[in-house]
Length: 357
Image 1 (cartoon, rainbow, N blue to C red):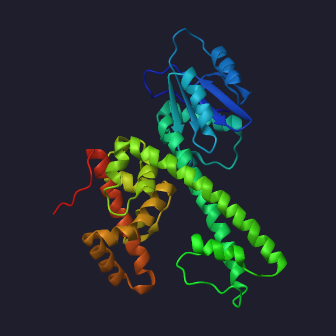
Image 2 (tube, rainbow, N blue to C red):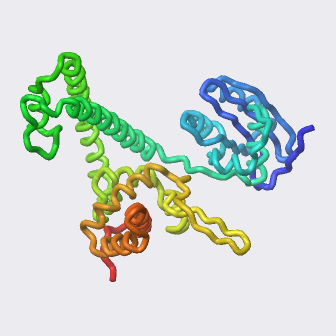
């Protein structure tokens, strides 16, 4: 027998839980007393959603609130719901798992649980990015994907070349094998036919990716030029145009974080902690936050120490204290943590970076 939950959230007449999938979605609509108004499975299409929700209204002017879980394909459903109901809540998958993890689950049960948690005001909320931030995220993540692909291609070309240490013509002195001089040398390289064919194909692919990355770079620079927040962030040591655009897109609205501690925790730059009774142990970073922000700030840490004496001293001090083996990584994370605090202050106070003593 299904347990009925009475609503604790005021001002809402109908609570809609949606277990959303790419092809189909299961919907449960409940009233304030926990009675099921309507439930059923629909095709994940805007017309099917609209038809189902219109038939679910029992009274004129009913205030409706809906919830769906954040995920890879949540965005279309979130847009469609925003046009149909008064408020859409995006649920954090990790928080939901902690609250309502069960051995037996299916779409019908999950949509009912979502509606119940919504009624109780217990949904762990995720942030639904603005349309502008969403489009920027797609642009920036696309560029990151292109760069990752190009790195893989470069690594394979390095591997092929390394198989022939006595190659002709001899490798010239150069810092970048993929600069103008390096590419000219790769084209002239005399190696066995099969490896020559593979190298030629990889060179074509590298050139294709290089063109796409340059076009993507121009889009990123346009974003930075048009957004003052990016220009503020670029005054922070270690933060260039790409990291500035990435941070702004991923943060979206800094005011959703009530304090810098919340922001740093969201990024995942705080250690785990095990405190129970007499035991109080720290651990590694929990890494449950935004992996794109965490990556950007960790990558910016070392460049930041090269241009800021205070950050360099902090890095050297932690490295020396923690030891050669793991001290550098710990120090790098500590600098990334400090940069996160600076980013929060810059965006919150709407100003460029300035050294304060």
